Image 1: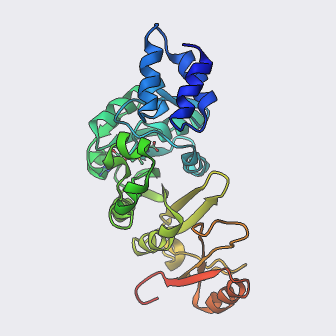
Image 2 (image 1 turned 90 degrees about the horizontal axis):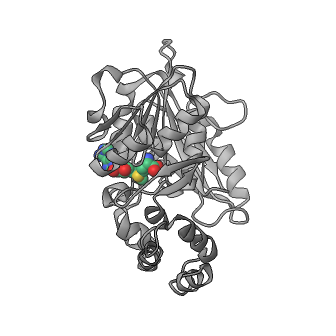
Image 3 (image 1 turned 45 degrees about the horizontal axis):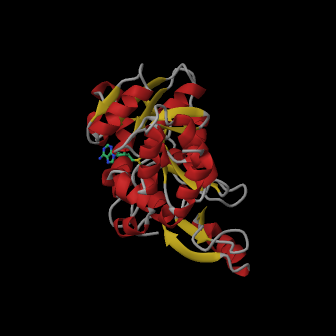
Length: 325
Ligand SMILES: C[S@@+](CC[C@H](N)C(=O)[O-])C[C@H]1O[C@@H](n2cnc3c(N)ncnc32)[C@H](O)[C@@H]1O
């Protein structure tokens, strides 16, 4: 079968990047007869990455196979932000590691780190062990999988968790819905069920000055920020419109006795006061309607920042960070 015929079959099946995919399938097919099988499975909806056995991620080739979540390019933002926090010799954990892509990318950027990875799914753990041959990959439920000796010593806890709200699973492309494990996608009612458990346990495992990082959807930001604040972690949100990615960072303060070390700080220029509110906004000229942004505001600057956003019709709502505000 030549490339043109493969392109036709893929295009007829609705593959948007039929030419690129056809070239890859032809190049990776190996023995005669295998190409036909791969094209048939791709036409039936299997992810291309499961068929060829790898995915490009942060400049690396990560092995993936059936039953394992396919790392997304947007997660490179999580890698970039986590990498920026890594110091020489840092203890780094890739929690909910799936194929181990995040850990592998961090190790490639910082070969000197003390990296651990963990996942609850034995299929993912097997895959991660292949991608991270010199790294301990633990199997089990969140922190319960980690060696007790890491408690209070983790400098960077990078966790690309499941965060799709349960009802939204049905809206996902069939490739993900039918071929990636539900445990890798389902984040419960609002998508933050696993994130809340991780945030709740993070302070105990982070070293002083350490950080937790996880991906979230824009609509989940106020609740994610509130969860970090309630857990005593200093929240920060990083957006990357190009990648369509948002990363939430929670920093554990260094205990110096100052009250504000763990606290969320107001976004007003020059203000170092504690924030009590999340101002959720969106600029429809720049962002799609669901691309909401968050500013944090203290009691003094809440009015001024809200007015600034409201005067441009950007303000969507104001959420208190704690039930009392
Ligand atoms: C969205 S996937 C991300 C995988 C990988 N970090 C990546 O970015 O490609 C989420 C992963 O979390 C794992 N997971 C879900 N619930 C878990 C739990 N309670 N404990 C540990 N891992 C869990 C899933 O098995 C899956 O591999």
